[in-house]
Image (tube, rainbow, N blue to C red; front, side, top):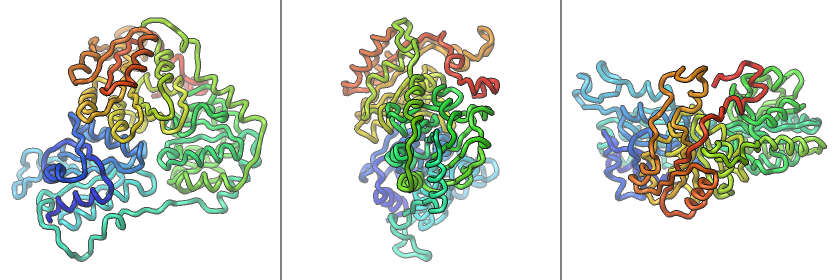
Length: 564
């Protein structure tokens, strides 16, 4: 058995069902073995799409998504998904190589990226993005590095890791015995869950018991931990209203009696006011970045007047943005489980105020029959096909803010958005990955700019027999940037050619539909849910609807507006 064979064996033992990647360089040594293994290769049209698919797999399942490909392209195109994974806490394991050429490596051969003069330095590139990376030089180091990559990807705060294969070690024989030894894969990758101290739990429970207006801010850490039941238990034990960050959307059903919506600069006004009115805040798995905190508007969160309990897996994050009165350091599931069991109280405030806050999910424009379709109404048509067995993926730009405001999700794990690094082009490959990983109906939503970046992922869906629905909210422009203009043509590069995405879909072997009315969109969405092929719905929206002017919160406006 050589090292490549042993690596594939490790991947099988660790339960890897699919690799997202593109053949090239010495990674071909692994790809050559996949047809005889239990692992499927999902090969989209480029490494960018593969990296997003791997990131979404990790985010959705909690198990590392595996990305593989040649070093220069994993360190360029493939960085998109790895950056998102780092900032959205998604477990990803990248397997790549440095395109070494043996004795020629010091002479700057074509594509060489191990760091010699005249070439690229892939380790430095990956060091800037991953939690950890390894560049092993022997067979035993290579297998151990892969094991550690899986361990570190999920240990503590999840994120991306990488193994850079040595050009020779991957084909050398793997020894039966070695010193130091290579332990079995399951043992070496085992992790343990951290939990807060009993003293901190007691202090947090006391603060929530004493609160008259308790509010929970649920973040992406609840997704990462899978702590959905524990979050609901705490909300009901302490009768606390629940709002979410953007990345935390769908950690709590937005139809629940205690749900208050999404906070932030382009979040719900009702949710933001809930936080401002609270006398105690439990922040669970949320770092409270500027978009969440309305760029720290002085009247939004006030540590001198509110009790703040911050639960986070990373001790550096608790009390980072706002001073915390209590820190609960540990996995969100452990912190919330212990907190739910430690106390409980009631109040006459939370349920009524949460009900009022949920009114922000609707606006008069949501009922408009105008054509082109108002984006608010388009979201409500999407909402009609979303149930607990649906996953919505949202791209970057205006579309995601229309979605987070007007798509009221009925269950957990029904909405995921590009919000770590926030790159355009995320939603379409993410939708394909979600369809491969689950039996759920998947709806990917993007603007025409973002969809065009990665629309070849539609072909990947066709090839692998999954049938997501892709909704293109088409205003023939970079809508968010266009709306920053002070006058027409004030900013270069915002207008696009009017592309017929329905015909593009048909060229990929999918179904394509062009719609210009709300009823047409509703019918197309309903039909797509029953199709055996992917469907691209090219929906023409009213480009005059100004997202920032419509959705920016009053708290955000108080600090001057558009920083995004």
